[in-house]
Length: 398
Image (cartoon, rainbow, N blue to C red; front, side, top):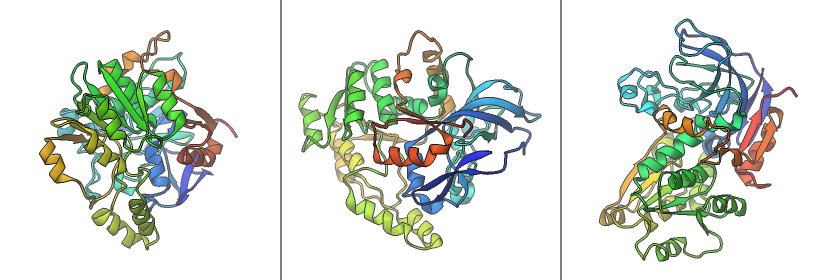
């Protein structure tokens, strides 16, 4: 089959690889019909390449049609249309019983002290081949895959794999009071949906901060008060001025470790990649430094006794945080990988009516490319060219 493989820093290729097969009785094989490029994939494309190996299959946002199931898979069967959550969870361990699916004890990668295994996301998270491929082996298929109805296009349901539940959790963790205010830092795919979901769930004011014109324009179409980070010298002051001088009740950091405007952090990440792999891995795990521009903006702008919800992925172990200010302001901080299946029952009803699209998923995908153009898709998405906000790949014949 063809699959998108990591071959080196900023080097992905569509390659011929062996077809997957059932290995465990709880496995399924899914023929992938759509798969997306995530901002987290860009972390592997560049700053976290240290933990990748040439030939690794990328991708953790995928959906398709079940072709084969193991003998212990009863909830789905051949011919079912399914979406795969990006984290792999068993549904019955202590963490899963508490609905903390991103910490599943059955798939935890204990060798590296990490939570649940993820599709297509480095040896730190299980080295599981990803979904940017023609076929995908799905472990724990008795619980993970989400059945979706026939009829609507893939892009109506594909984002159940990651974007929608990640954004839903970010908004839930932000603890926005009814009619309250929230600022979303970063209007990439997650930030766009955070803003829409916050409005859908009753926020009174939603601010969105970004530097990319196309992202600002998309958010503005959905009623978001946008703040251009390039045009404003002090975005935090702009938002405080619009919230009676206090700042918003809540802030969502939807950017993560690749924030712009942090040259020192970027230089440290680049230098670490130039070291031998064994040395680089130890350095990144023990002394890694992220680019904290977005996070520091979140801490600055949130009002006293407000909440900061972090959905952007960070990887540093030695990040300097303004602890004195955070303590003085009484800020609550919540974060973590999305517990995908915890939220999908709430989200799915918003997607199944073909005549209603309250979250605007039909106006979300900006580019659809064949799998063979994956290298072009990654480069375009990384450099935010051609208005790229969300890129979907189709594993169609070359």
